[in-house]
Every structure is written in structure tokens, then in C-alpha cells.
Image 1 (cartoon, one colour):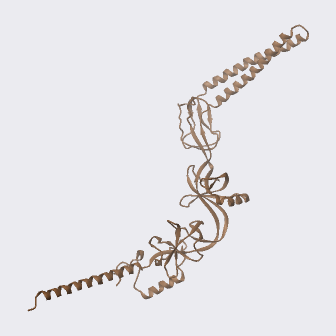
Image 2 (spheres, rainbow, N blue to C red; image 1 turned 135 degrees about the horizontal axis):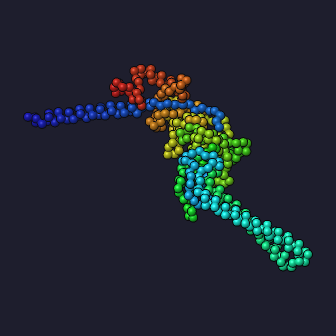
Image 3 (cartoon, one colour; image 1 turned 90 degrees about the vertical axis):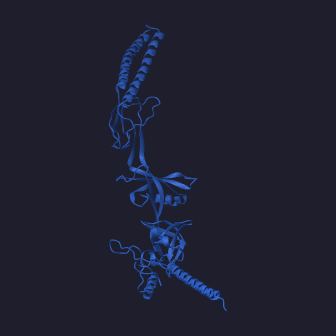
Length: 421
């Protein structure tokens, strides 16, 4: 009689095989779906590399410095009797800023003047005595020693007069220092000493305020020494224009190169330059950091791309180039500053090639891409270059074979559509 366990074991084996088959089929379906997603084109925006004549620009980070800066300190000691300037005020040369109590120094000057008058009277008397004794000496009425004594007395009083005049002049200067004036025109900083404070005592080195000349103003920056020969050559032909821009590229002011330092910094291999700006709109301020840009000779047939197309990586700058099969290739490039929102590609890119300007974050070498429509500017023209002909042909073929397929954001199926079958 057959055992009843045999049919049961066969049934269990069949069920196990069926489950394994279903799992394998499910895994195949998931793998196929992942492959489909991996091959789905990534939407990007592109532009065409163009050639044009571009100026050679040298760009560096610079620091704005006042054209002239003066720290106001008292030259005499005393009490601040009157403050004639306030914080942040614009002042002009020789404008009165402070009054120091002048009474002590006026008394010194009056004392010196009185001493001068006294000695002057004695000197006049000594000159008269000398002339009289000379006459008497010639007549033999007085001795030579007495005549020489009169001469010595007159000469001593002449020296006393010269000393008294110097003391009077010094007292006049001291009295003049009681009125503190602006030595230059500019913008006053914070007033650090107010009325009633005693200043100028021994050991007191306080600054009353600082005046910075803002118009014109200077920008100091350093550039690599390799640019020095060209900068010197262009400077010999005339003034070199220099632009001062914000970190975001906004133009603040345009000036000209004022000076080139007399030595190259050995530690950094750079040369220090200074440019002068009129700064009529006061867009430049002392201590501000700006991007200084010098315009040198023009470069013919330079390869130009939008600045957003160039990315920075571990090995330097790179760019994604769209090939004819709508895949991308990553290339290392070398660039130099171009015009507004553009860069000059010195090597790594040929004119006419299509580069990715938006959507690089989703790309790896070999990724398939789909070119998005470019946003139009105010005139209705597209900002970036149109896709290459082969790209349009490829998309046309895809649309012919898949008339119902639409792409949502980042290449996903449009909302409401199911998974690929």
C-alpha cells in the first residue's frame, strides 16, 4: 500500500517551485524597471560655444583704501572747549574741528611780546651808547676797553632780540594749535573725544578723529607676475582702465591704473597694483573687498561659453559636452575671465560644440540628456543656443515611437501615468 506522505511531499515541492518562479519573475520586472529609469534622458539646458573677439581681462580680489587718511591729534595740551564736528560729517580742508582752551597760551604769547619790547628798548639804548663811545674813542676821550664793552653790550642785546622774536613766534604757534582744523577734505569718522576732555598731556596719545578722503579713492590688489610684462607694455601706451565689481559681478565704478609696485612678492609670486577711482557715487568704501578687473589687449577668435556651464571639481574646472547621440562627455577645461556672465575657454572645447548650462547636478559621463526649452528674454529671444540638429532629430524619432509619453520634472513620467510596462 503506498505511503500517504509521498503525495504530500510532491505537493509541497510544486508549491515551492511556483513561489521561486514568481520571485524570479518579480525580480526581472524590477530590474527591467530600474534599467528603464537609468536609461531615461535627463532634462538639461544647453548653449553653443561661440567664437568672438574678446578683451583679455585680469581679475583679482582687491581692497578699497582711502586716497588719503589723517588721524587728528592735538599738538598742545588743554581742555576741549568746543567741538565743531560730528560723527560721519563731510569736512573740507581748513574747516575748524575743535577749540582747545586758549587762555594759557594767549598769556604765554603776551609775556613773550612784553619781553621782546623790553629787550628792544634796551637794544636801542645800547646802539646809541655804542655810537657815542665810538666817537669819543676816535677823539681819544675814552679807552678802547670801555668802547669794546659798549660794543659787547649792544651785540648781546641784538641776540636777546632775536631770541625774544623766536619765543614770540613759538607762543603764536602754540596759540594757533588751540584751533584744530581739517588738513584734508573728506569724511570724518567717529569723534572719539568730546567737549570737556583734557587732551595732549604727557603719555596721552589719543586720536580725536580720523578723516578719510573718499573722492577719489584707491583700490589695491595683486595679480600673478606672469601678467606684469603685458601690464607694463599697455601702461606705456596709456592709462589702463580698471573696473571695480562686487563678488556677484555688479559694476561699482570704473577707474584707471595708478601705480605698479617696485618688486614682486617672492612668497606669492604676485605684483601689487593700485588703481584710482573717482567714486562720485560713493559706491566704494575704505576696507571694502571688491573684484578688480584690468582690461588688456584683445584676443581674436576666443571660445566663449556662459559662466554657469563651467563647474569646479577635485581636478579643477570641467564642462559637460553634449554629443551627437545625446549623451554627455565630461571634459577638463582651462578658462579665463570673459565679459559679463561669460568665460573664455582656453583649452578643452572647440567652437560650435554644445555644452550643458543647467542640470549638471544629475549628470555623469555617458548620461543621456533631453534638451529643455530655453527661457525667453524680454525681447522674446531665447537666451541659450538652440539644440543641435541631431538632437532635434533624435527627439523627433522618440516622439514618433512613443506618442503618448511625456516627461515630468527631472525626467520622471508625467503625473497620472503608471509605471512602464
